[in-house]
Structures are given as structure tokens and as C-alpha cells.
Image 1 (tube, helix red, strand yellow):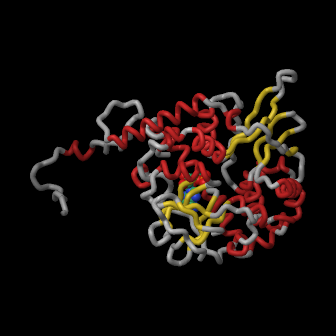
Image 2 (tube, rainbow, N blue to C red):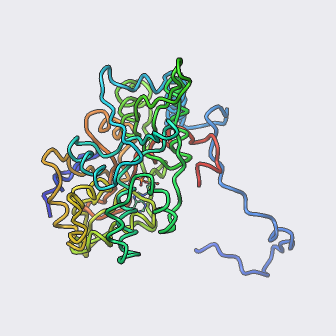
Image 3 (cartoon, rainbow, N blue to C red):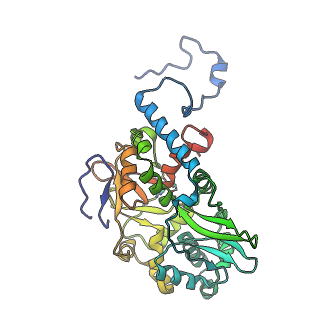
Length: 375
Ligand code: AMP
């Protein structure tokens, strides 16, 4: 295993790597209707609710309120750099050619354009390539056709392999940033295209694409006065996922791990050893170099080999413990290129995973809408 940096309480990085039971009929008697009463739902205090709270709770809610107001004041335009490039791919392009274009330009997604209707046609991401691989596994006799598939066939591929078709969400760049975040979270998209209407032609124009990563970086860099108030720990706010974690081992095949990501609709799988010690994380973007040049057979090779194909500037895997506080996580987001945090215990064993979507969901919805938050 790669050497692990000592954990000093802040998120760290793994380098490029009584019994009080009453018998049922004993006194005091309980009326049958007591048994029938539905269990009360756990309550989450509302941000605006005037209930007595500890100073830490108060500060936390004050921080969240500040962040939400910030996201309502700022627009998606504000997140964009002064100068940027945008690569838009025609929906008629062959899927294999699109892969080369992404690799040559060092990008992992691109908006699609339907030149027949002159309309935005969705977003190409690494999930689409994983779906093509899944299709190839389910229909091995179709390998020759896979080569001929165009980007416009991606929706048919999703239907053929039975995965949920992602909604083609977009947002106008001058709408509040809160709206872009909310749309992404509700549709489970990790990035959202900014689509404007051209004044002269009245047609749609894709301005850019913003990711959860960019938005959280923007929040972390610009709102330290609010993020510094978020002093509750990961454990206290139950940030992330801790049950039914999808994991893999170094010897598992890339194909098996891709299958896991497609079926569970997740973008990363921690790589652990037999003691559940975290060794690395296989991410959806790691699929792209694996299928470079149409080498689908290489997908049978072990995850350990695939991880060696990562670009040299790979930032490593970020970890934290359940005792780390959200303000420390925001500090890490401010300083580093973090796409998720693997939650480990003091023996580096896997406890959970915190995705950027978990952090955004907490920032936007905690205490606002119990049903959505617990979904
Ligand atoms: P993501 O795929 O990173 O957008 O995460 C979507 C949701 O799945 C988040 O709530 C994550 O906490 C959860 N998640 C991410 N990776 C895993 C995994 N390997 N096993 C189980 N849940 C995960």
C-alpha cells in the first residue's frame, strides 16, 4: 500500500494512492392504540426555526443560511473564469472518435449538439463510455456495431442495457447559482450545461458547463466567513454514505468495477485489501484511458493495472475521518483538487465515502425539506 500521511484531524490525502425492556404485558398497561400509533419521523431543525439550540448548532445554521443566500445572489456566470474554451461535439460523431477528442484535449466531458434541429442534445460524460462497455458485455456479438455507433445512439444504448436515462438538464447562466445546484442534485447530474438563447436567432447556445467541483471550489474560496461557522463533524451531520458501500480489490477486473458503477449509479469505487484497508479509489474518469484506441479487451485486466494509466498530474486520493469538521473539509476544498473524500478510521480502514454531491446536498437542503434530504 502507498504510504499514508499522518492524520492531524483535518482531511488528509493518500498519495497516487439494561436493558430497559418491558415485558409486553407487564404493568403499566399500554392501550392497544399506543402500539398502532405511527412512529414519529425524526425531525431536523429548520434554519429559520427559533428552537433552543447549542451555540455550535446555531453557528452551523447561521453558516448554512449565509451559504444559501450567497448561492441565491450569485449566478452560474460568476463561476466561469474570464477566459475559457468550450468543446462541443456534434451528435453525429462516431463514439470512438469522440473518445479521441476528449483524450487529445485533456477533457472528460463535452456538451452535444444536434445539428439537424440546432439544439443542445445533452452532455457526454465518462458514464456514457461505461454504458457502451456495459452494452458490449451484454451483447458481445454486437462488437462490430459498437464501432459504428454515433453519439446519437447513446440514449438507445442506455435503454438496451436497462439503465436509467439521465434527464438532459441545463440552466440559464444568469439564473441564481442555487438553481444550478438544485437542478444537478435533483437529477443526480455531476455537471450542468449553461444554455442561453441567442438574441438574434432565438436559438439555444451552450455557453459553458459547470461542475459540482467548480461550484464547491467557488463557495470555498469566496465564503470563508460562512464555511468557518460549520464546526460540526462529519459524524454529527452524517455526511456521506456509510452503508452498502461498493468496493473492489486490486485484482478485480476493470469490467467488474465498471459494472458496479453503472448498476449503482456511482462515480467511484474504493479499492481495499482483504482487511478493508483503503489502497486507492477507481473513478469513472479512470475508464477513459482504459479504452483509448478501442482496446476493449484490456478491460479484463485488473484494476491495479488500470490505475497505472492515470495522468502524471493525478492529485491523489483525499481521506478524512468521521471526527473531521465540515469547516476543515471546506478548507481542503479551497486548497486542493478534491472530487470526493474517503472516510477512514485510525487504522486506514474504510468507513464511508463523501461525494461532492453529499456536501452540496447538505449545504442546500439540510433542514429545508426532510423528504428530499433523506432520499
Ligand atoms: P457520486 O457518484 O460521487 O455522485 O455519489 C452519489 C451518491 O452515492 C453519494 O451519496 C455518495 O455518498 C454515494 N456513493 C459514492 N460512491 C459510493 C460507493 N462506492 N458505494 C456506495 N455509495 C457511494
